[in-house]
Image: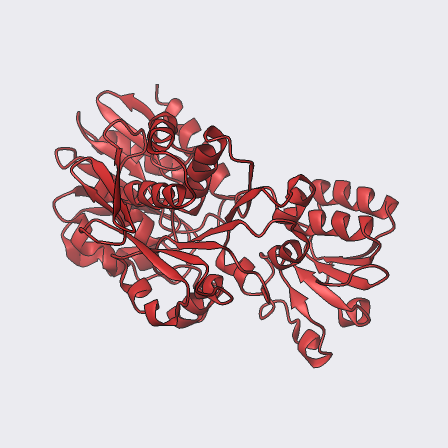
Length: 452
């Protein structure tokens, strides 16, 4: 276990995980040094709370002078060591861990279900959390989903199941973190603003399996090219989910999921699920497989799936105007997510696709084969619009660029005909124009409602 009493501990970044880590460390006798580059109203409130508890602060920089004497550092997932010039940490041999590593060391329960992947993490984590709640298992849902693991420590005893959404950023700085069940939903191009190549990104993702042994389980997408390349490196017991029939795990067939664990077959009907589309079927398969593995009955699983509503900004139907359906998929921040969203739209509906945002260096040319026959018009906006236009120009689909999201929606409405779908699936991050994907989705919805 990490020693914290009377230790000097640095925290870099005062987001949710940084703030909760600071509270936990102070309450357990540590001397806390907090380094935060930004300053706004939300940060000021956190600073006021922590100053009263004795924390020391540096605002506007992450300086060597301020952090040079700490015993170790808890770094926020949004802070990239490389881009923030934190080389002095290595030079001074100061250990750096993530908040999930800190929490793991103090968690009374090791019944951890870690869920990661390029897309689908939050939906899968939320659905699995609902299944556990409805099964009357004692559980907490935390991690990258919003409330931190360390913030939930006080609610965890040795019988608690921990349903934990984990990002690649959080996995970069683990040491002993070891989930009993580790789920990798998919891997595709993402975060090229943080990682210099695909191998770097995959190296971060696969750390979720690093400390597992033969007594643990891995839940893996059998249909994903990148995941198949990792199988030899994973030491835990492997169970798969797939759209093809498989013998150890879950597969989808004609509106139902069949789960085979040690020769016993369970059946989950998905025809009445409110979640739809290929990506969501994968999320449901993963959640169902994990639930069965943990001993939850099929009836509870199926009822929860049927009552579970899609999360905001994920294939969210906003309105139908003059027979044109407007869908908010603002959470789509990479081409893999755009592909799944396109494939989830009924073939009889033609799509007007709105793409664009902050350029993270993705290869958008991979979308070409999914656009043909389904997308009738592409509208681009944001920092990445010209590069996307260049990569997609050979598909023989009309492409227009606009200055902002409002113009996109007005153009889409003028082009659309009865039966068309306006799909706002940006395939980029939001930070060129918006605070986050939620604000971007809310703006989309507001602009659509203004057409009513």
